[in-house]
Length: 314
Image (tube, rainbow, N blue to C red; front, side, top):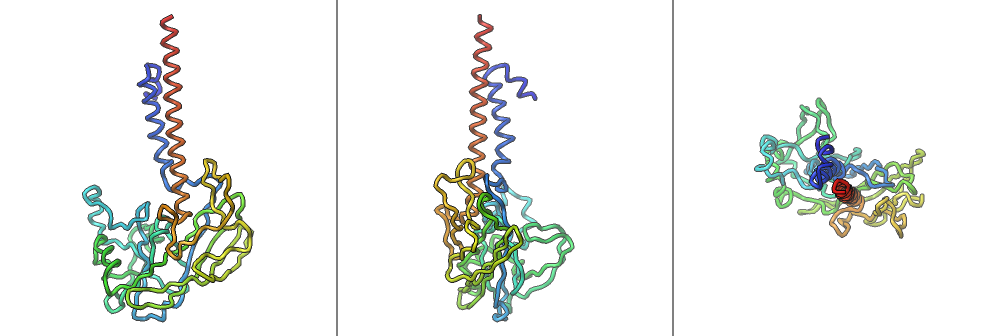
C-alpha cells in the first residue's frame, strides 16, 4: 500500500510499484510446478523385472532426492547452506526390487539411474522414518529399506562413489518419463513402464524396456510392447501429445506427436527430456509476462505523472 500511495509522487513511485509487482509475481511464475497452458499432468510409474536373478547385487535408484534442476543433493554448497551440514548422510536413493510399482520424483526424472552394488559390502536393513520425506515418497512412521554402508558415505562423496567405483555397475539408460500431455487432444491418464535387467557385467547394467501400459481417462488400459528403445505409440491418436510451447500453450505448426524417448539417454537440445523442458519453458514464459507487465506499469505511470505535472503547470 505504501508503494501505491507513493506512485503519485513521480516516476520513482511507479518504479516502486513495478518492483513490487515483479517481486510478488516472479517467484510464483518461476516455480517448476506452474504448468504451461493447455497442459495436464499425468501419473508416471515403472517397475523392474529379473532383479532376483542377481542375488549378489543390491539395486538402488539414484538420485531419488535432488534439486529442482535434477542435481544430486551432494552438490549443495555448505558455505551457503550450513543448515545441511547435519544431513550430509541422508538417504537420497531408493532400494528397488522386482514386480513393485515405483514412482519418479518430478525433479529427478532426467537424472535417475539404476545402480547395482555388491551385496557382500552393501547389505540392506530396515529403518523407521522419523519425519515426512516427500522426495522419497514416505511419511513419518513408515518403514523403508536402506543401505547403511551407503549412508556412511556422505552425499558429496556418494556422487563420486556411484559414478566411478569399480565395484559398482550402473545403467546408462534413464527412464522415459512422461509428465505432461496436451489437454486439447490427449485423454491419457497414466503411463506405466516395465523394464527388465538383462545383464549385470563389469561396470554396466543392461536395462531394457519391455512394455508400456497406458491408462486413459475413461478407465480403459492397454499394454503395448517395446520393439526398440523408443517409446511405443498408444492406439489412441494424440495420447502422448506434448503441450505446446507458444505463449498460450499451442504451437502454430505443432503436431500431436509422442514425447521423444529418453530411455536411451536421448534428450532435447537443452540436455533434458521434452516433458521436463516444457515445464521449465512454461516458467520462463510466465517470467516474461511478469516483466512485460511491470514494464507496462512503469510506462503508464510515467505518462500519468507527466500529464499531472503538465496540468499543474497550466
